[in-house]
Length: 329
Image (cartoon, rainbow, N blue to C red; front, side, top):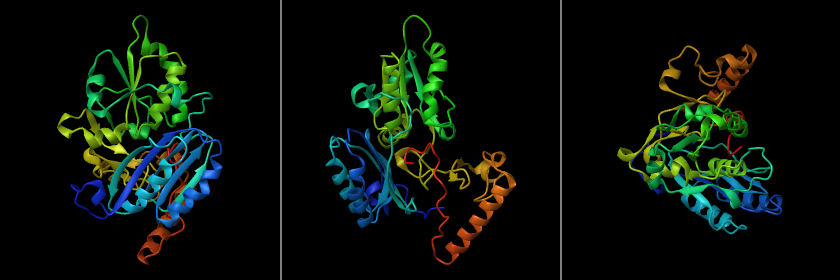
């Protein structure tokens, strides 16, 4: 567990500043941007993951407030990145094990050719206007995140596609489109995700599919939880984040879930009490997905990590493999 820190501190007052950022932009040669970006991050002692692709930049990075500020200045100077989308939060301890800057085909993988959120994304809705939109009975509200994220928390009345990766979303929509939209007057469709990047791309996908009245939450759940007072909120539960904080709540304060280091799913207090939970080895969600041999390997890894931590060292296996659907993977 992370060290205890006063939960009423603002993000700038926490020991570690966390920046979740993205921007859909046109990078003619994203590989050429990698080395300068990685050098700056390492020089500033930052850790996390940044993705570069022809369609832009995406990632989550943590470090000192000054180091994060220098990184944001650098990214905003990249082509078409002056209006970079950034959500800042705080952490009691460094939530990442290393710094990685990767070049990929997409900054968030949907696998659908020809989608350009810069040209055809849905209508942005500010957090303070979101409640009115999703409370309208003529609005269909869709959570574009993955099943294990939705299980931790979602907006009241939202549809859960039960997808395991974002790549599954197009097939789900095509299969359920007729049921969702019906005949006659077409409803409004409102979509949301953690930081805004997935719903920005999914709204562009729906518009490419011929759906016109499409909206998405600007800044995502993180911006909503930061700006909308809890007593006015329609959010229920906590928000899963892809780092060692696991979940956050209103005001971007640390949540109550822990992480299964075998499958990287969130685990609740009830999960921790389950006989299928073993620290570093399994949880109720993944126990049946792993073999005895795999669990034995995880158990040995966890033992070595524990011994290394007792010596004040970082074990090489301390960082579990990222999920393939992690937006920062």
